[in-house]
Amino acid sequence: MKNGGEMAGLNVLLVDGDRVSAAQHTALLEGNGLRVTRAESLARARILLEAGRYDVAVVMAELPDGDGTQLVAPRNGGPPVVLMTEHGTVRGAVDAIRRGAADYLVCPVAAGELCEAASRAAAASGAPRETQGGPDALDGLIGADLRMAKVFDLIDAVAAARTTVLLTGESGTGKSLVARAIHRRSPRRSGPFVEVACGALPDTLLESELFGHVKGAFTHAVSDRPGKFAAADGGTIFLDEISTASPQLQVKLLRVLQERQFEPVGSIETRAVDVRVILATNHDLAAEVEAGRFRRDLYYRINVVNIELPPLRDRPGDIERLAAHFLQKYQAEAGRKLRGFDGEAMDRMRRYAWPGNVRELENCVERAVVLCRGATISRDDLPPSVARPGEAVLPKDHAAQSSGLKEAMTLPEKHLIVAALEAAGGNRQDAAARLGINRSTLYKKMKKHGLL
Ligand SMILES: Nc1ncnc2c1ncn2[C@@H]1O[C@H](COP(=O)(O)OP(=O)(O)O)[C@@H](O)[C@H]1O
Ligand SMILES: [Mg+2]
Image (cartoon, rainbow, N blue to C red; front, side):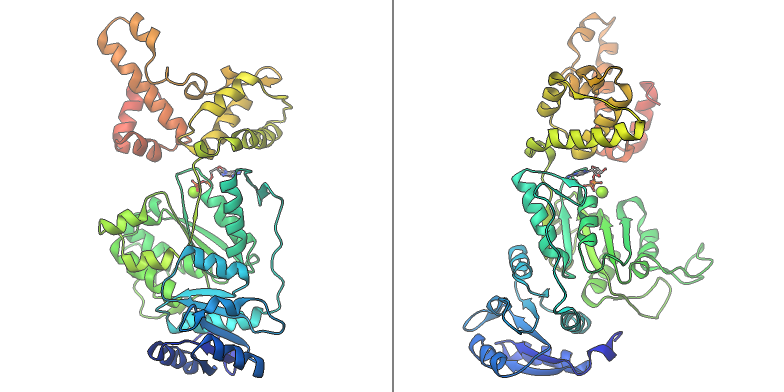
């Protein structure tokens, strides 16, 4: 055990009404040198807390005489509480942490997980909690919509603990930004923040990218490489597009989430890391589980706290605010001073559905700043998909005028491709996915339409 030395001798109050699990948890804690006193009910726990001093309380949420969360209520001189539950829910985790729980673990817990949570809680007790930022912005995240306010609230609530966080939402909704905000507001902020785009690498490479490898593990492994988990030690690792993980990788992820341990590819030596894991996906993971493509146990493990980013079209009130924010950013970069958007341009932007979400809006504003000739951005400075919705898909006049059916038929395709590329911020992989074709087909079509 990595910090066995720091843990030894800690006085733990274990509150667990189930004799079997209490015995298991006692064994895990005592095995690492912690001293355990057990209470089998809320009532008994209260008596013991009055009578004795504990460095940390490890409390099951489900107790015979009530909800263990009650012990979290900040009391004078009470020990920090690590809450455990048989039935992890997002609400439960968020409520517990917001009320002041030091950590929230879902059973079954591994030895390392439980002991580290307990010692971390004991060490951190008394440390001040973060204060909240402004009402409609948080660490570069803009949003005044009620749903975004909830997102900010969740970020704030979960930042302090090491709880795994799952970010869901369409591409471009701000998942990467949220992951950084959580890290920056956590006690790990001075540690590394390591981001891995899991979808961008083939399985075999991804495994060694994450866990490292030893020299000779495979053909191109000419030297030892520590990998991203090792690089994130003491900080946060952000695994983007997690639904692409292969079954083999899912097993390894499960282990590192449970025990904070792994073996580099080709090595039998186990490494321990202290990382907070944040994951993101724009797929419906529950559906992936039902389809048998994603492990159920891993899903439960990563779905402790789920922060869902709403698509931009569901928060139209934020469009203007975000547009103004990006205008500031890009006119500063371009060394220009613009007055803003005229009424018609803003109207078009408000009506548009933004399939590429905030990323697409950002690209739209960046492009407009470059194209704009006057002092105000007008409709003509916007991409066709935004400025002339509908026409992009079926250009009426054009179709009628053009020389033949065949030529007319290719126009909608070209417009669709342009729209998809714009929505994807120029990312071809993403654009191809939106169109339901593969990347090489998209490439061929772009060539055909003179888009390359
Ligand atoms: N609420 C927001 N406020 C300001 N900028 C945002 C917001 N949401 C997203 N962005 C910006 O939009 C772009 C896409 O966001 P990103 O976090 O990469 O999305 P995702 O990871 O969900 O695809 C980034 O440039 C990001 O800075
Ligand atoms: Mg992202």
